[in-house]
Image (cartoon, rainbow, N blue to C red; front, side, top):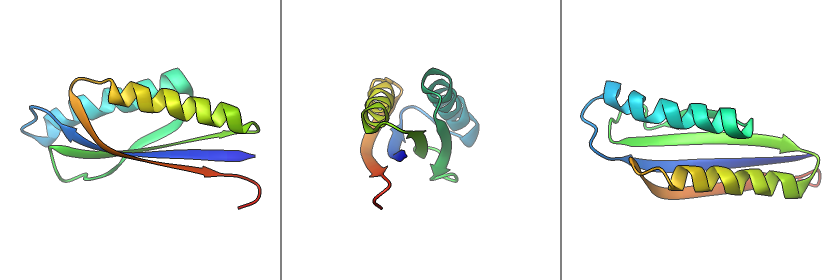
Length: 97
């Protein structure tokens, strides 16, 4: 069994309130869940309206599948014009860990 995780640190564009922040972050999280069947949530910078941290995880018996899903998720978030991707942290956990 392999578990892959991604942590995104995002800078949001023209956002002036927490309500506007939610309107940007929620669709990203929902699209990640829907398109790639991953567990995703906003996990960091909850009280800052121009920053966000999104975390996601996926599980598979095949390390290649986990890597492919993580690559696709990273491309999706990096391609969103309303956010600037500051950093990505990737972890892969296997049976040997």
